[in-house]
Length: 576
Ligand SMILES: Nc1ncnc2c1ncn2[C@@H]1O[C@H](COP(=O)(O)OP(=O)(O)OP(=O)(O)O)[C@@H](O)[C@H]1O
Image (tube, rainbow, N blue to C red; front, side):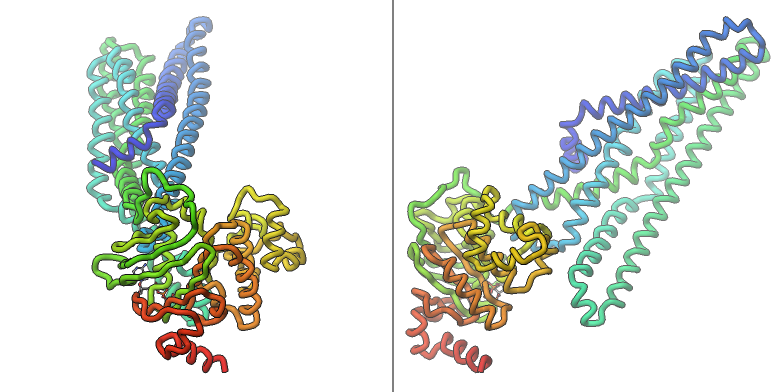
């Protein structure tokens, strides 16, 4: 019920349009009843060869209802589709905005295919909530009044017969269908989501799947999910077919009952014969309003399941609470980390324990350590993707928690090993760092990152599409674009998170030179497990299992014969 009310609230801004669509739906079916009734009356009367002038009124009514039905149908479709598409786009934006506030911390537990399924398929499913759940009963209720009045005008018992069969087709049949189709809607939403997640996962990991000969297994799983979904869709279609026949049966029974009651009245002279066909067709056509009712429950169940999946995400608490008023820009860009401890959840071990270091404005500090030491965790905290549990991190004189995430992200430029490049042009990818930058600034940043001449050599220069994830570029070129992006952003604080990992030694050396260019005048934190280029660092902090185990300059650490020295020797053994 709560989900139902929340969905209604989402529809609230469009209530006027929806009301119009319902009114037009009523007018369409009303015109159809009028058209059928007046046509039957006209034909029956014309068969008695009255003077042609006497038929003029009925002829005009047939024309009027015929045209009205078409016009109302068009307008009803126009309004209902208009409102549905606006609703869907509003839902998509609303859901996407919720995703943004949760990224990345709260989204880690979801598969990307599952999220895709929610934003595409589940949102799409919700169009049925209005079109097939809310609107049909309102239209049916509205049509019942005039049809009742029309039939009661001739005989009250005709009207009661129609009400009885309306209730049968519009209430009893839907309840029966609900019993038969229990859980079909929900299962369909869930199976579809699993199939989407599996598909996206398979497409993203296609290279590994082929390399490890897993295509067969993947296909088998996909086929089994497909079959499950097909079965559920088959059940839904069976229900739709059953609904159609039951409603048709109730409709015909209603017509025959009215005829069985009316024919003796014609014989006894209580009712004129020319009204007989009119009554029969009026009853038949009024059932158009009842036809969609039996599928309300499966659609309602499906909409509720889809809405619940969306609300699950939008209700999640962001991992970081932004302050009501952000501290804005600090007066100095130094970072002070004092006694910081953090774990990803209450059951996990500490990823960082009592971490201390100071990074003065314009200074350079490297955090190194073996895999799992907590280096990326530190970056997550500095970018306010997660909030630390103990200790403090200050940027300038203020705690990081006093800055909104937006402000933090504008103050800190990041180059990571996994910089995401979009399936867009080179220029668009660079402009992501500063959308308002002019062409000259873009070129300048690319020049400083030494990627300009390469870009110029591309077929369309800066307008060349670089493919999804920048797949048309080499690793080194991708990193240079990332560096150009950071140069364009021109943030006072810089984090380099394994910025050269995955590059061959020659390219790494070249990219390092670009990185030194990027570091100039910025407060820089380098996160790495590769021990190259660290001689220019003011301090190196060595982390192991979340704790600082050594600190000093490269020279000092090499003399200490501790973990740093071990890592250094190992790295140089591998190279030699
Ligand atoms: N999202 C997460 N949820 C739970 N635990 C996590 C998460 N990310 C990292 N961890 C855990 O936190 C610890 C530190 O991981 P982190 O990624 O910070 O190490 P790292 O030093 O960056 O390693 P690498 O050099 O391999 O990237 C590890 O034990 C890891 O399993």
